[in-house]
Image (cartoon, rainbow, N blue to C red; front, side, top):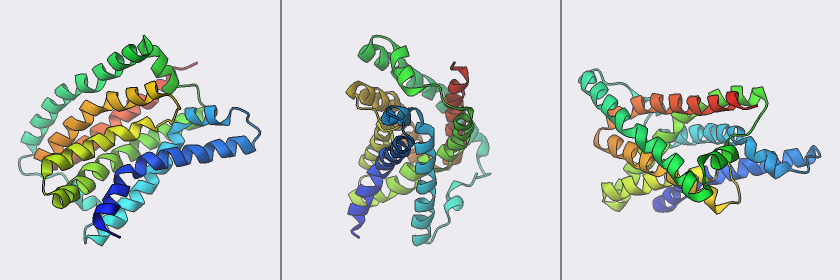
Length: 238
């Protein structure tokens, strides 16, 4: 397969997998006589996200092997200069907090008139076993998402395009774009909200990893913790 063609598939693969697995969940619910199967499948986005992460892990593992690399060898902590990594990480955290929170509420308020409407579309009451799976999903998010876009795709786009900044932009945009399908709701406002709320955050993380790749394992841990916080929102629902 042509390398540029395969990179194009990889860029959109996670988004397509989110939709495909949600469709499978909806079909299962329909077979169980649920008349609102698609609506219920939206609330079970944790499951489609987890299944996508499992597929992503196996794909990444195979891709790295084809390049003569081991998956986990790319994410080792480097002892020399670790203190500088920690200082940069702390600075990045301070910058990333408003980048990840302000677009969320401001875009939702702009589109829906308030932020609660968008949040209720995303977070709906689910069985406790789904919440438990959510914490597993959060761990797998940290394990695969940033490595997928910034450790595998971005370097190879750089090689293909001969332009590291264009590669950074494309990888960051697609990282943000995938979120419109988690969950997949036929509502353009929801798509704009999901894309916009992650855009600046994705650009910033990609920028940091591009300039200092050794920060990747730190960001992977941070990512997993942030997503655990998102899963905890389900525990507040009644």
